[in-house]
Every structure is written in structure tokens, then in C-alpha cells.
Image (cartoon, rainbow, N blue to C red; front, side, top):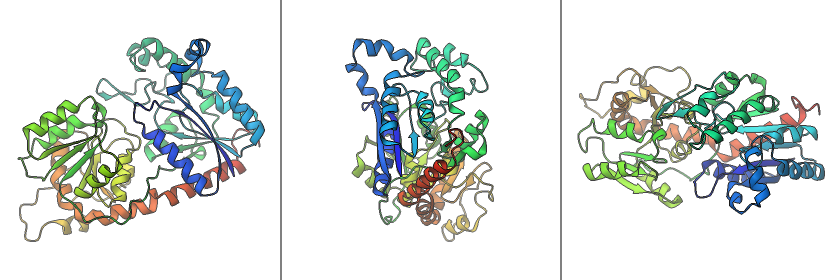
Length: 425
């Protein structure tokens, strides 16, 4: 099988999980025997562009002529079975879907965000979830609120791009939804079920999990949508030391909040930005990983890393988080299942009551994004961590292991190559 993987890389100065995932996926596909033809552009190329190329940048999200020429030449020369598109902005453009279809090549796209509808791709504005542009022919609210890069002009361009390319997106042969929440987003956009498949990302297998450590680990960008404020407010509702340590890793605009919390309380430890070895060590030292996003987080990779390390996760019931921890299907209320009852310390009569709103999944718990709910769930997660450690690892092996995910992706390619929706091949 021969596959073109098309991706506009985000700037290297801005750490991108999407870049990392695309690189890893190319490696996994190559190792599985797929011939991958990378069609990559990078936003880091923009400063070195010629004056003419820079002048054309404003129209690139709608139609990038050089990218279309280069892709067309690649398709004619190599005759791939499938084109797999990730991020098209700003140098590739969704027009590559039309270019591929013109050559009879079906298109698969992995949906990493909500940019079919939302100019920022986040469904998040001014600190709260925002879906004002859903159902509109033109995302005027995005223009009014400068949702794309803080610029009204650039927001107008992106909103226009989304309007122009609505038929383009609806012609994609298969959409890969990273979670069931993304699948719901695509259905709401008008994509029929038979063109949507759910396939998450994978992370490398770190090997057999170490014994559970102590306390909680929060590892994310220190930005408002990742819920750091929510976590710290919930944490302060417990006496110092009552829950063990809270270790926080990452960097971003909210770093001063973490540093202030660590100065205020000895049970809050700031680890800074970690390399891969540091991430592994931090996961080993904790018992529970936290994912407290206050937006519809698509697929926080830290959750899959936690499951691979046999660490259950406490998260908010938003975006892809319930799917990742196996809490997106109806189950009995938290605290009533035998696993959680068994996790209470022997002879304990003061185990915290399980409040309404905490939902236990196969590999963790989810709660509403509210300080009281999260504060109530912290002791529940601490008490139940040991019971969910092994199920967390099992869920990783069954759904998120590279061998499983790569086979699933190859099956998707094979199916779309046999049964393209729109190309007529």
C-alpha cells in the first residue's frame, strides 16, 4: 500500500502534540510495511519565503497554488492508494482534497480539532466554552471576537475559508475521529455515519508498569483551557498533606500561578517542563494522573501515557476525556461497584461519601468542570487508584497500543481504497 501523508507542521517554537503524533504515525506505518510518501510543509518556512510568496499567504488557507502543483505532481508520479490529511493550514489548504480527487485518489482526514466549524479550532473563548459559530454559513462571531490569532482580519480570512471549504470537507471519503466526542462533532457538521471511523492515537509502550507511587500528577500546557485554575481551587479545599503530593509539570502563561501555589503549600511541587525521561519518572512517582481541561479537549496524550504506565486518570467530563478513560457509556454510579468498594482501607469507617456527579470508567473517573465536584472526587480517586491501576494498563493494551492502532489505520486505508465515497474509483 502506498499512502501520501499530508501535514502542515506547527512552528517548532510552539510544542505541538499533533506534530509528534504525525511523526510517530509515519514511523509506525513504515515499520508495518506501508510505503509512506510524506507531503509536509512547516509554518517555520514562512519567514524565509520570497516577497511574492508572502504576498500570497492570505489566500493560502483557501487555495495554496504551489502546494496544489507540488501535490499533483506527486500524485501523478507515484499513484498512491490514499491521501491521509492532517492539518492543512496555512500552507497546504483543504484544496488538496479536491486535487487528490481530481487524480482519483481517495482522502482520509484525521480530525485533531474543531476547525471545520470553529476558527480557533477549540470551541473555547474568553475562558469559557463557546460554540457561537455552529450552524452558521459564515462564522461572524469569530470575526467579531478576533478568535483566530487575536486578529479581526485573520479571523475573517479563516471564517471565509471555513465557509468556502464546507463542500470540500463534506467530500472527504473517511474522517478519522480520535474519540467518540469528535465523531459527534462531525455528525453535527453533517457528515454521515458511514464516513466516520473512531481511531485514537497511540503512544509507545513503556513496558510493564511500576508499582503505584503517591499522590497526583498534572502534566499539561499551563494555559487557561487546561484547567489549572480549576485544579488549584479544588486542591485548596483540602488540608495541606491530606491527599499526598500534587506534582505539576509543564510551562505556559499560568506558570506564576503554579509557582505561587508551590510557595504557599508544601504539598504542591512544580516540576517545570520535562523531557521524556522526566515524564516517565513523574508517572512512576504518582498514583493518579489529572486531566482537568475546561474545554472540549480532543485527545489529551497525557491520558494515554498514564494508562500505558498503569495509572488511572481523574478528569473532567468534557471532549474526549470520558472516552479515553472508558466513561463515555452508561455505568453504575461511582462508589457502588465492587472494585471501588474493595479499594477502601480495611476497617475504615471515615471513607469520604461518594457525591453525585462522579462517574467511574474502566480506567478512571470524570466529573463536571466545577471546583466542588473535582474537590469531592480527589479523595475518591486516591482511595480507588490501586483497584484501577491494572484495568488502566489493560485498556491501553486493548485500544491505544501502537500495534493495535496501526493495524486499525491500515484497515481504514484498505477499506477506503476499495470503497471510496466521492472519487468514483
